[in-house]
Length: 117
Image 1 (cartoon, helix red, strand yellow):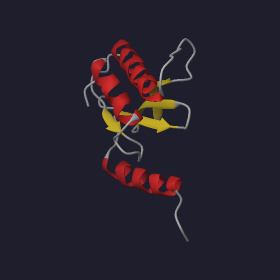
Image 2 (spheres, helix red, strand yellow; image 1 turned 90 degrees about the vertical axis):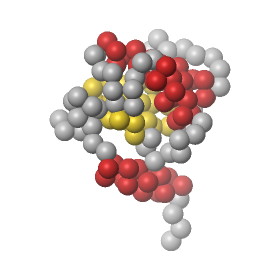
Image 3 (tube, rainbow, N blue to C red; image 1 turned 120 degrees about the vertical axis):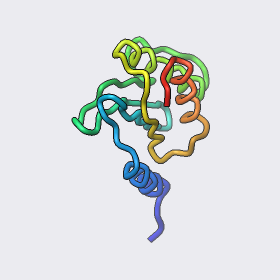
Image 4 (cartoon, rainbow, N blue to C red; image 1 turned 30 degrees about the horizontal axis):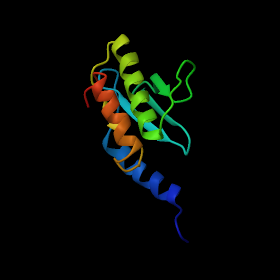
């Protein structure tokens, strides 16, 4: 049985998740990418809840440009929310995607906004 692209990504994501866990002091920054949008959350795995979230679909977020630039803007928006919540460091979870393109742009935008990985 041939694995689909999504199955391969889920398998890689499981492998990543074995190694990293987010805590309240050092939460995990999770990225999900669809064809049109990009979503990211800051998660505390020990308590099992989402601390912050940002996406390209948020109200008040309007951006014209390509998807890579849009992802960078979402990363900056998340970093601003993290600053207001007194978070400065996170563990980056690329979600099984390659660290390239929109995922890399989101990470760079978050770093520019002041988050440390």
